[in-house]
Length: 320
Ligand SMILES: [Zn+2]
Image 1 (cartoon, rainbow, N blue to C red):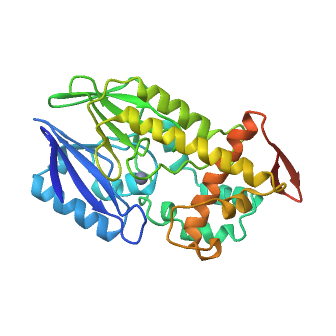
Image 2 (cartoon, rainbow, N blue to C red):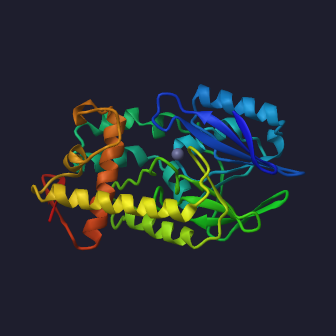
Image 3 (tube, protein in one colour):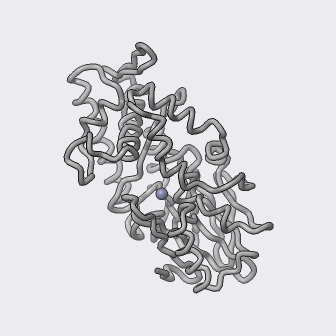
């Protein structure tokens, strides 16, 4: 399904089968000489088919197309190896490029998850959509950072660093049209997953909240997010997201009042907006995302001195 959301800007809805996100928005910006595609889809046949159909319908010339990837998750970066042609630039922040190109990423994540109480971290990593549907090979990324310009036709976008959902998450702002491509930093009707897997000094939730405050200061007419619908009032949505995390943080503190616990056990007691009544019924990838999200809140509280972490037999527990 294709819609022109602004003059020369098109949204292609790319399906993500059997994934709670359902679809990702890939945006295509048309210029007289080159095209820019913002995010691509997972590296799986159903996503590729939809993107190829969109490309045909819009008569996009891949020989003259560059790719701006908001962050290194497979639903955004996954198809670059299928779509990139010789001279195409694939823009990504250096911090996310380092993550997706790290050969030890998944073994490190599995080790970290194990230390936070995840029972079968190796199986979880094997089933992880971020691993299963990532690009083939080693794409050659062109790295962008805060303030860098990306010009296409009538639009002159500026990069806005928004760490939180990933360490190198980048948004694109167009000050004349006042449009803001938010990737997964600001989403409507669903909340961006904020996961910590406890690299030293990591505080993804603290980073995310600070990034929300930065974006609130921008003059924006319409947010074009990576999933679901455009957002007309970014400040209202930002307040809702901040309130959501305040509630979640209080919930985590309430759970820790029952005693010291691993991130996995904390996640098992939190309320999740999923259709499974028992934690044990959650599919392994959903348990993984939930544990990562619990951990992000635990790290946030630890960083602010409200809880402490103790280690025993290679396992971390948190307590008040
Ligand atoms: Zn996404």
